[in-house]
Image 1 (cartoon, rainbow, N blue to C red):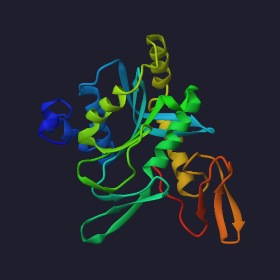
Image 2: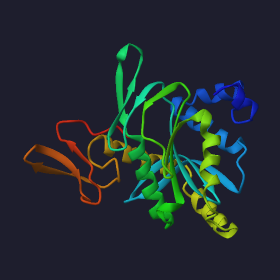
Image 3: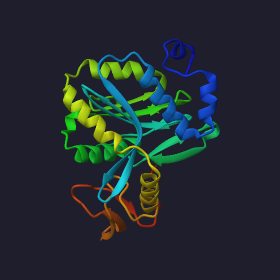
Image 4: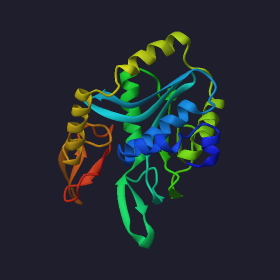
Length: 254
């Protein structure tokens, strides 16, 4: 992330980084994000969690990093990508462009994190106002055209994470008492990664990639027909409006 981040204590030393690099690109990005939150200068009571498996519709959805703060819950989707990044709020697929014009597509992290928040909100029984969605990209990419920040959604690079978190929290009132924080910490700890939870999550991801489940909400996909052709649609329509042409692969999901 850089010298200034290490100087502020928001980035680990090189030896620690190298050790976590061996875990894979995605896990490495999540580690750096979690480290920045744990070691950054963030006032107030808070606890961070990573690899949180939230039950939804008899399955699970995985949250990369979660920050439970007395002023709200920040749900973080980590994308350790390079290249130029393009995407909008409404697009199902975002685009990653490399040197030479080579393009790759990935499932919208905005929609992906929205499904995470919906699952967690329902599981904890909290109002939507308690949550903020953060999409955190690595410093190796360039955010060329992405949605503007709103009070409910922030899209940023990891080197700006702690500063942005303080901005978010600075305009929010305290939401949780110490007793509520104790209860939420205990409930979230129950959702942390275990071999059994990881196995169930892998099954869910496979079902989504195979076109059996909706990547937005986890409900079953059903075959539908219209004047425009045949497509797969979410079985909870109109609550969830996910659709995909039946001739196309279902959007990748992590």
